[in-house]
Length: 104
Length: 248
Picture 1: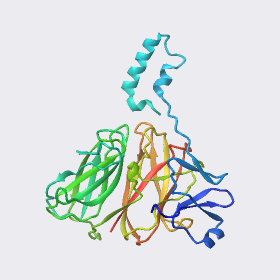
Picture 2: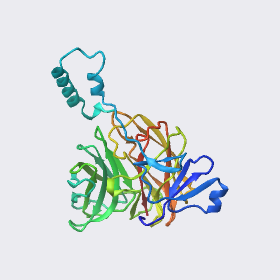
Picture 3: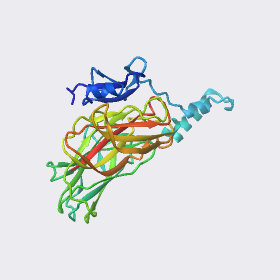
């Protein structure tokens, strides 16, 4: 399938991406249903790219920034006034206890 | 226990599940759990003597995150008595393990014939996942059809669907509805509609991991695609992976 030509099919009026594929409906069907077909340079990688309706091209997907609840805890405004070493010790304990659950 | 290769996304060695099955079976349920690392997995179930395993169920997509997750994959394929069954896995986490067990169903179900071949569509060996489905940034509106296969290589009488986590270890709360369709791009015809998925921040996993198998009549040469809607728009957390398995 690596050699197949991929197409993006989007709604002509809005740019909304309707389908991605190597097997595409007839042009007459697409046109009569308000759809436009454009060839893609390579197979779409939706894990790392997303469709931009305005420019009608794929753009990089923004990186995910996870909340770190441990950092929110130790940097909370009501966190006790302790020295840096104690604060870091509490951070380490919380990171160990909550493990992956610290990320949201 | 079955161990993945130390190299991520590379199949490990076959591990024997049973030396000789005790009964003739018309269906089997593969039960998978992982006590080890968070990751996405693809699991092969093989049949045959050691070093001569033939793949019976290819690339079953399974995922595990913060907590252990058990998933059951049931497919109506025949297994003769006396067969040796084995499993091998690959994972996004090198050296990860899964606990695998198989339940054989010997009496069949009314109206069910024996089938003998399972074909996976949409599995991606490079990242131990499936084809990513993007519900888009518009909430609760079905979005782009993602192609799982351009042309099925065999007819399918049953279709099982597996859901993957896209390598995402930190999920938001979210709900999805997804459809599976056949037909060319721009002219898809849903055959399985509005199946629900959800994710929560604690297990960090899109669930359920498996739907079906469903009785279908998909001819050879069919394009299969999936699309979804979601109630969040986060560019990463709205994604999920999908793979399907046709049984003939």
